[in-house]
Image 1 (cartoon, rainbow, N blue to C red):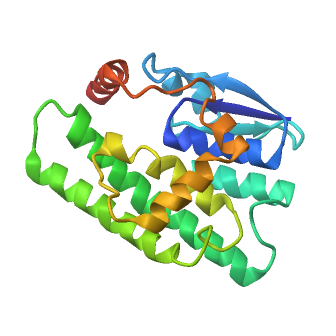
Image 2 (image 1 turned 180 degrees about the vertical axis):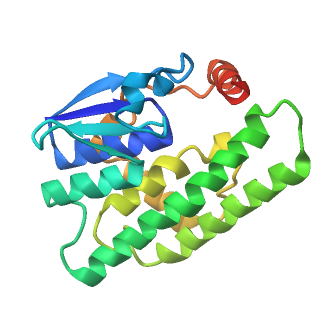
Length: 220
């Protein structure tokens, strides 16, 4: 049994969608970011960095794993799903997972901050992160040419990138003309496990309430 500590964010979805795709039983422990529950001593014992998601594998001596990408690799290897066994194929999947973790996630996260949450409109910063987000999307577009999924076989690389790309409108990143990317987004959205995973621990509605909460977290 896996204990999942999470909130409704792209990084949180990466863990819950993975768990849904591998059909592994798990118990959800919602973490309220607005209340600062990710900074409590209890949670910091699981993740010293005070970020979601995190898991505890009760079947493996209560082993704790933090960092969304590390969680995905751990679960994929534990289940034997979503990560090829062949060394080269496995490396390609991990490369595209790292692409999300080192590029898509951070750039879209900063686009969110400057486009949505920051009290001042600093246009050069907004342009920088939205333009870099678009550039990264164009890299995905090229990789998806002639492929249904990023590494041919469906994998954790697809889950990780999709969980961020799907909120591109909130980040103000345009996907016009990226036909391969748009088709891939539609394929991902049609997967039942993806649909289940993105409502854990609750559905996220990107509206004024989320905006207010994010601004409060940003100023803490």
